[in-house]
Amino acid sequence: MKFLENKLAEFNKTLPQIPDNGKSVIANILWILIIISIVFNIIGIITLLGVGSFGVSVLAGFGLGFHSMTIWGTIIFGVIGMAIVVVLEIIAIKPLKDKAYLGWRLAFYVIWIQLIFSVLNDIFLGTVSGLIGVIIGTIIALFILMQVRDYFIPDQKSADPESPDPENS
Figure 1 (spheres, rainbow, N blue to C red):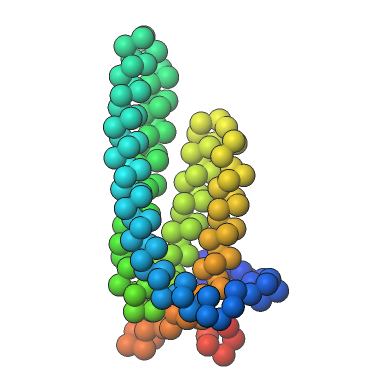
Figure 2: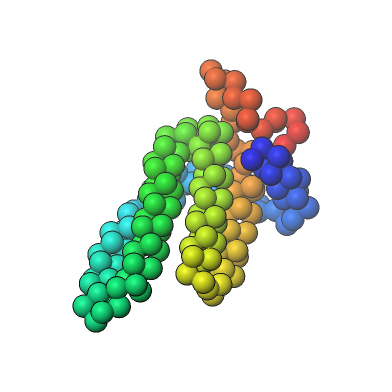
């Protein structure tokens, strides 16, 4: 992941830059945006389980048991992906608030995990209709996250070897 991060950081330097005051604002509120994301993801998990259970019951009632099992696979897969994201986001709140590099790195991982689970879910469903939106969302999220990368400092106590080198950033 460090290689990918460094390549994206190099590429990001060639892109138009968000003004410094905008970057600062984003870096300062990133932890709040993560909390909002956690709330929406938890609502999504509850909705998937509730609506999914109802849909499966209806399909099973009409004798479409095979289709209901396919839906359960998608529901479980979605819930697992969202749960992993929620856990990582919860862990990232404090480091993001403290502007520690660990928080930024966890947010970076969350973006990739969401992309992977979304693509796999589309493959599992046999559709690519949501793929364009997922790719565009991932590009926007990575652009914004890479823009504020320099605002997140390595933890001096742990001397994190994964943290960005301030002289090369």
